Image (tube, rainbow, N blue to C red; front, top):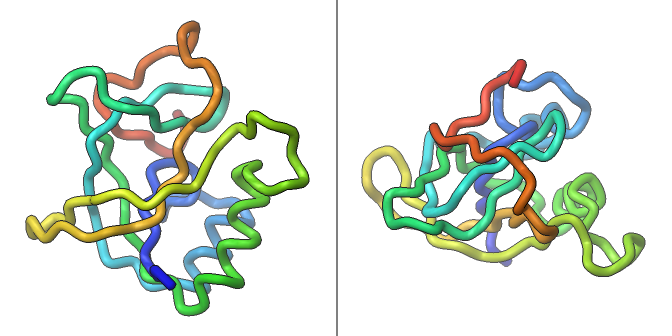
Amino acid sequence: MLDRLFVYGTLMRGFDNPMARLLSAGAECLGAATIPGRLVRIRHYPGLVAARDPADIVYGEVFRMRQPQELLVQLDDYESCTEDYPEPREYRREVARVTLADGTVVDAFVYIYNWDVAALPHIVSGRFQPGD
């Protein structure tokens, strides 16, 4: 099973919540990474959607999970993408190509926002920061 996860919001290092702590305890941060896409503000957290322009880049981090199957069960619940949530679910987990800071391209799981974003503000910088 794929053991890498790209995160771009409240699961990144620097965020203090139970799921960010769970990820940090259960995975090794491989460092900064980017993915093509647009970042939107949902409420106190962001969502990643498909890029509208080739210049749309989202910044985040890649983690290597020690026990991906077990960890993803908990993360999927946090991201509201399990069968316990009605369709369409808020997020869906997909495999995507991400670029590490050294230019290496790897496959990683990523949570993609799955609801309408027409009325949501675009985070133009592509970076979600603690306190945003």
